[in-house]
Image (cartoon, rainbow, N blue to C red; front, side, top):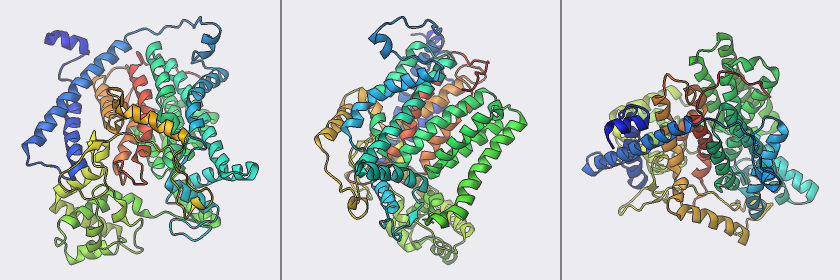
Length: 587
């Protein structure tokens, strides 16, 4: 194929946007090495060969993907209604504006998910979720007194989950029925939201084939029904966030004029609060997404309202609730160490590598601020999980400013140590293979596929929630679900969909690549429409763990689930042939 033909087929200059796949290639080389050896071999020639190979791979994938998007975008949208009759008509998705049609579409999705709901009865509680629920029922957990609820895991989720479990126990005499009721309600909320999303994409002009492809992916990719049969703050947040992003896009479509609609504003605030309170990172994702709107060409009044919403969320969640509600509800505030996870982890790396390279004043600032002293964080440091070095808290009276000054000074003396520490901790998002052991790696380094690994059974602490509902081993029905996942993860070609990095770094970078190549034109929408998706992806890189570890209770798959949930919608937005100027009435 000649360069001229290639240029024509790709819809632009051959070199256009090359920096995105090349940068991703270098990042993947870093992640691949850090995920197995916890070090970047910058002095080894093979490292740069890896960078080149990954860069070429991603460059080819991105260019072919972009050409495909351009081809799809040029197809006209058929407005013909389906003429199917009888059973076929009842099975076909409608994508209509009426709520009855959307509910019917939601029911169709629900039915495709129903086998998983039945097989996984009553649903899945993660280890920490069980401890949260135990606190609600007066059992001591997380080192708190009986009756106390620790807000390290959001109290909103604790009350939400426990309310359903209490209802099941009170009305039906079974805690398990309460868990099952929650799974049903979560299924219903999410399927309705997805149906609304599919209607939105059709409204924006998405063609019939890509719209059907998005719908079928939501219906039949098993990770969705498996995850949404779980009680976990990350899954709950993903459900609310999915609804919030739809409202956000309608807001952007209206040039923020929907802020004048009282019904929309109330709904937007409620969903914003739910998405923010269901996960600690949730508020920051929403606030940053809204603040991005300040850069847009919108009326100053509407920008001010967006800022006011951010202030409202911060005041309610970070000021009003802790000051007035927590003491009355016997809620213990979570530690502030969550905001310092990455600095503490990197400092731990420096303490491990250079234990003597610290002045007395720097040592004092660290010892007075962290739970563990400088000498202790050296022993506590683990390259793949930050929790051991943070100690789940900070000392009272320590100076944040002095600690950050020390952190900066140590980093300036050992910048590569910090780089190694960062890539080791977050390597799970930027590699196809890595370790499955939480420990300091030793030769020979062993690598395993870094794939989505959803939990299909409850893993309860026998000293907390296990007192109410003893944990059971995987039964025959749950083994069927596990077998489906295993087949998906081991089947060539299809198993690509199970690699974590596809959703956490490849697709987000591809979205940026497409937006860059389409800059200055209306196709695909503006960067503002993708702000929540991109901000939420970026938030992954402050998590205290990223690799799925064998035999450990941590499950990074749930941390990245929202990136999987939003990816088909992002592709649908990229496939939209033309941005519509008219603003649909909010319904």
